Length: 239
Image 1 (cartoon, one colour):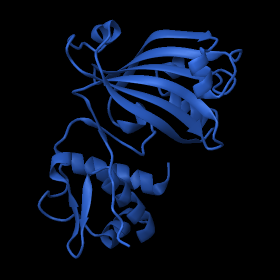
Image 2 (cartoon, rainbow, N blue to C red; image 1 turned 120 degrees about the vertical axis):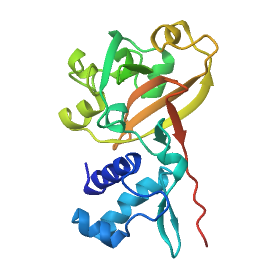
Image 3 (cartoon, rainbow, N blue to C red; image 1 turned 180 degrees about the vertical axis):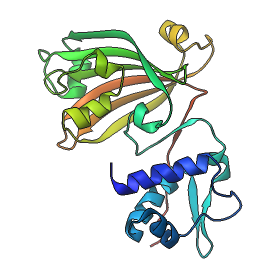
Image 4 (spheres, one colour; image 1 turned 120 degrees about the horizontal axis):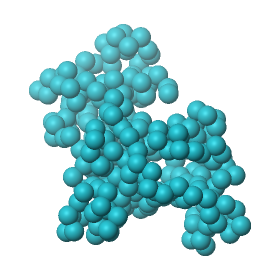
């Protein structure tokens, strides 16, 4: 993790814990640079992340302020630029996994097309329930090529697949393409997410790719509506 990412994580934690006043600007970049022993450029990049997430906003001539509704929001905030995985997104939280299905099979035409592989390339097919602080949050149905994502086993599935990919396999995750849609709950959702038959489900269809452009993941994540919010920020640049 880069220095600016570590700093943004710490400042995000401080915001959520009420460390800074909501009515006053947070310390300026120079003061924070001194505190965190980094350059102003590094601090700017750290704060830019939080501005993009909608946690901070800059007011010219007055400083950088906390967005009050965001500070009080207990939902998991997933921004349009994040591809971290739930474990990295919720650092400090107790996250466990229940493996519902884990098998190796040949892909369907749709899965093969999304992963840019042929129909004879085996894929992992896994379904996991992700549990945060003993509450069910999301069901993940994921396909990954066995030739690319090696050494996937139950130990990895019970922790973080993304950490396995980056730290154990030494691969670099570059980003993802997402489609987000509202959906009705399935029997699987009702059973594992403990949702009512008329509760909405937030489904995220995602293709993740490495820094060489190769797709490594095709997944469908079924989120409880009362636990997540997806944020996108559009910034109009002056000419």
